[in-house]
Image (tube, rainbow, N blue to C red; front, side, top):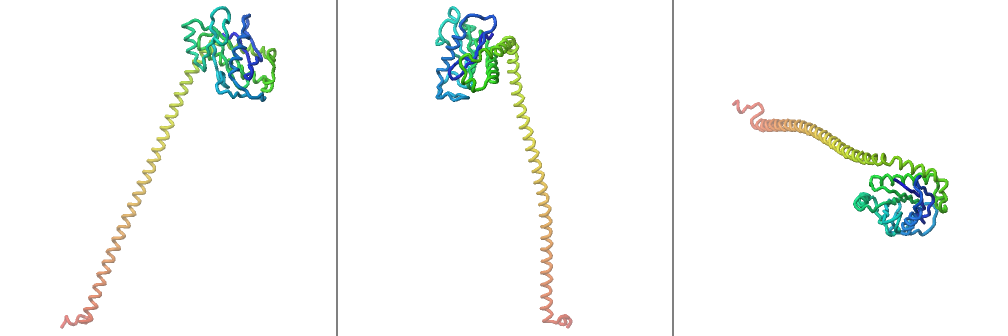
Length: 285
């Protein structure tokens, strides 16, 4: 369950609004949260106070823009004993290791989930040892960031003093906190279902790609078959024309031979006629 939530400025860790769930009183959630924020902000390096989006020039930030972090406070004795410097930090989404350690050692009690986007850091404290609820808590932080930035501009956020929006935003923050605490089990199950649905969608995408490739290959085969048919028709036309040209060439060859024979016979007739007469008198006598 989410016990406490706040919105802070990412540049200096100034808390702008906070809310504790009903029925939880006492403790030092704000003090410990300030320690966590200062520890995180101290790893950033801002060169200027330019209004709007602020970007750090630090090369090794504990909470870079767009990242999530989970800090775990070890419960030694009493409520929130120990200092923030004694806590373990699990970077990224390694919630399974957090849950495993919680089940084996029994020392992990309070989880500090943090999410940063541009000018805003959202933080919530939960007592969830089940890693399935950690994703729900991060969804809460993302929705909280989106809702808060809709209410207040980047200029107001940059210029705001500590707890300046605590009164005006207390009701929306309380409603969002109550909604996530009431529906956390359903959201955890839904998240698991969505995980499997995402896998199904991935399989569908792969199958779709394979079908597309098969269809493209089929189209390529159809194109090749059409080209081969065209080539075959071209070969047949070429063969037919070649046969026609061959027959024409043979006919011309025989014609030339006949003309040559006729010409030779004519020459022989003329030569013989000049010697013996064209009426072949010498043969008659």
